[in-house]
Length: 60
Length: 485
Image 1 (cartoon, chains in turn red, orange):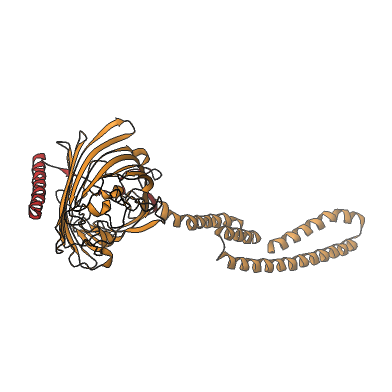
Image 2 (cartoon, chains in turn cyan, blue):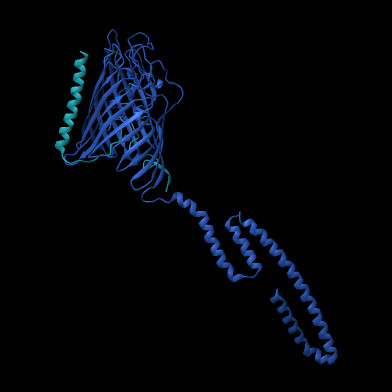
């Protein structure tokens, strides 16, 4: 039972990787994408900091 | 002084000459000469007296000038100007004063402005910069565990309240040095409030997230040192749905502290949501050294070694296929924690599972997990994550999970995008062999980008099947807002 479940899980992982590879191949040339990790402070403007989204307290 | 003496003699001479015609008319020559001699002697005495007085005054002025010169070394440049001006007036060197004042004013301006110019002038490209940023993420959590229901005012652990400082310095055109301090401050975290915690779990939870430095080379990659993300952290959590502020693969972040129960009083041995769900997300954040390769065709490989002996590797990918309007991001990570002997990492509980606080920081031997997310320009998006963990504890099956999410990002209102999603997770054997935990929910997020704000709301149902157990489902509703400041 446990081994069947593990096998199923690993097959699912392999299927995802394969599907991703197919999608990537089909989509042709790609441009870079800035990805922000889930849970991090999001990019973009801040309520007080404006467009920068940060307060620059020192710059040289 | 010599000019004054000459002037006095000339005045005396004029006075004498002006009196001669009148004296000549009234007196004889001898009498006139005597009178003239007397006047000249009198004038001579006056000149000598004036000369002595001037000499005395000159000495005093010189002494005062010397004293002021000493004070100028510590006084403001303006005082220096006044002192020199007074000295110059005393010496009647008026033509030189404007030049000296101009010179001193220039020096004065330089002294006062130059240092602050270094700090305030903004260049097109920062060589050195220090910035502050952060967010507040608060919400209302309402639950129903089948027996009771209640409401908590919480900090949303999906993306907790925090602030950070980031400093960067450009060492060369290729190399950048950076340092980061990021801490979170949570009051009533959604992973800690529970049916038995009361409405307030007490003091502020002030915890570290990142305390690290890095060297980043465009050609050679980036090396991180300190407390921060391990290479595999985040590999199970790639998500482009736009709703990750309230739901992503780590579903325990929404209401992880709540207990599964039957209709009897809750016992501390009852499982909490965070005990039975996990997204097996690498080695979390820890004290480590980490290396990331430069990006190559959207791919980045990473590895890290953490304090106590664990290590991990990861491969990330992110790209924008503009031709077909698809953005995609994904990662896969392998982690080996078999050598970790850090007591903070976990203690064995009755089920043989190593856990310090019931969260995902559980000791294990190794695990493999990954995630992928796609977002089409139409707004339709999908996310998938899965993983397996080997505990190698006698009698314990390996942990597995599978997570899926389908979402849609819509332009319903002018002030920002609206994102919707539904998700599902099935996690097996996380807390004990035989456990089968499932959850599903619906979520919505309204973005207000102009104000750095998101409004969100969602509902999720949690189920647990455990051999010998009889637990009711737990429903949780979370409403709140994240404000980036």
